[in-house]
Amino acid sequence: MAYQSRIMIWHPEDEVMTKMMVALAFVVLIVAHSVLVVCYPMIEEVCDILQPEHQWQYPNAPTTTPSYVCQR
Image (cartoon, rainbow, N blue to C red; front, side, top):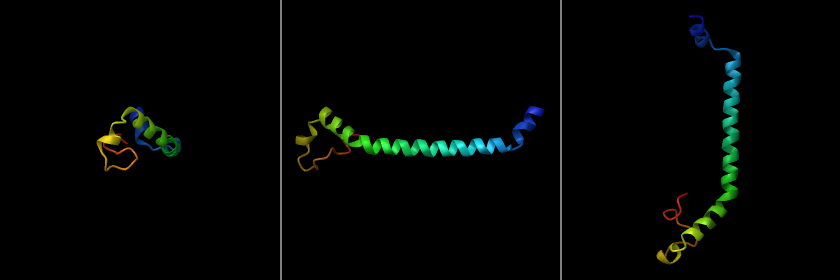
């Protein structure tokens, strides 16, 4: 019974932990976005190397990799 009441009461350390988790989630999101922005041109080049046929298969397409060829 004592353990159950421990769960029901909101403790200050739980609030601090929640704030830390939210902050960590934002940091991970920002880092992931930065990595994506830096690596995206390289990913497009890899897609061009792996799937060069799209350049002649779709003559009206722009020079960049179409989204339906290289999944973004």
